[in-house]
Amino acid sequence: MDLSRTRLVAFVSQALPLAGLGLPIVIYLPPFYAEELGLGLTAVGTIFMITRFFDVAIDPVFGLLADRFGTRFGRRKPWIALSIPILAISVWMVFLPPASVGGGWLLAWLLVLYVGWTFATISIVAWSAELATDYDARTRLQGAYQAALMVGLIAVLAVPAVYESLGFHAMREKMRGVGLFIVALLVPTFLWAVMAVPEVKVVERAHVGWREIVASLTGSRALRRLLLADLMIGLSSGVSGSLVVFVIRDGLQLGARSGVLMLVYFVVGCLAIPFWVRMGGRGEKHTTLAWAQLFSVFLLPVFFLVGPGDFWMALAALVLFGLPYASHRFLMKAMMADIVDEDQARTGRMQAGVYFSLFAMTEKIGLAVAVGVTYALLDLVAFKPGASNTPAAIDGLLAVFVVLPAALHVATAAILWRFPLGRERQRELRRAIETAS
Image 1 (cartoon, rainbow, N blue to C red):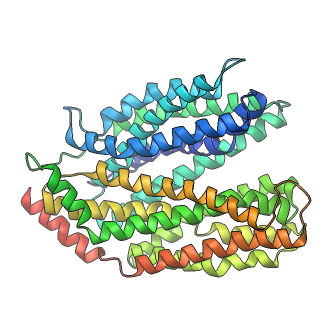
Image 2: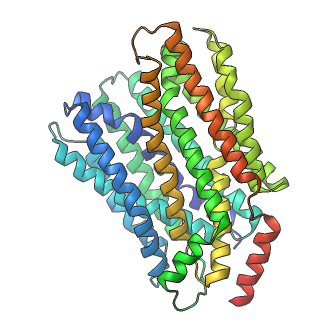
């Protein structure tokens, strides 16, 4: 369907609070609970690991459930509406905790939070596949949604800085600000989308058996390639994300300016989204993404040229590094929506929830594996975070930061280069779906 500008803005506004949730859970909450609330590194690390595995496990279960059971209000919007109180209450409890809490309290509320997170995120991406059915319209919709995610990400990064400027330096005060920021955005944006954006009526076959669903999933060459590419990107993003603070602070000796450099990195990534949308419209989405991956390969070695304390050279390197940051985050979602068309043409069922739940799993697995592998490699090169390191250890840090992601980017480009579902094939599938309905 054609979305008006108002409806498009209403739909993508849901990304603002979700972006505010994603980053603080990884960066701010673990040290807050481990240090300020006194739960300890081991206990907090174990709790966050358990809840992350829980998050991965429930994605496909929910995807199947949401696809198979609709209501008179639709299949996507009821779950998004249900996620509002779940997320609002759990965010309040996690970011604005009582003065004294235990590990069981944190574990319980994080599990609740991830249930709401799954209800919202899987429903939104599945809904997006149904709202935009044209090959290029999907790129534009996903690009707009990713831009909103980046705006939310930048905004939530600014909250602790604003609190510090007002004289509130305690982590508890900063987390209070982040939590209030998320809840204040969550309720109005989700309600606006649910009320303003219609669901698309999907005509389907009455029943598709489990064997047919599994056969469709395992028989899709496009799905296998996209999930493998997503896993590779999850690994490369995990390596880069887990090391970039160490590289800026210890490798480049710019710790005092790391906040500014990271903010510039995300702003550049946001500003580059229209360029990648335009490139995807001129060519094929998969070739555009492959070129973005190769671009990353050629720019990563620039970090070897940055001298200790050289802020301007580090800034230039991060500007280049940020240019392709968001490309895969929306192009791959648009490609997955095309694969959903392939499945619908084959089975007669719209199963976007299942497909996007698999997509969510692979990146999360890649991110989780990357941290373990990366930290093991840091031990191998004798790098010690926050300590005085030898030149050899710093060189080892930079080598891991550059070489491992570069190899993964090359692998991703190779996987995507011969992706079997392009513009013409997707339009053939849409004609077949519309004729059948």
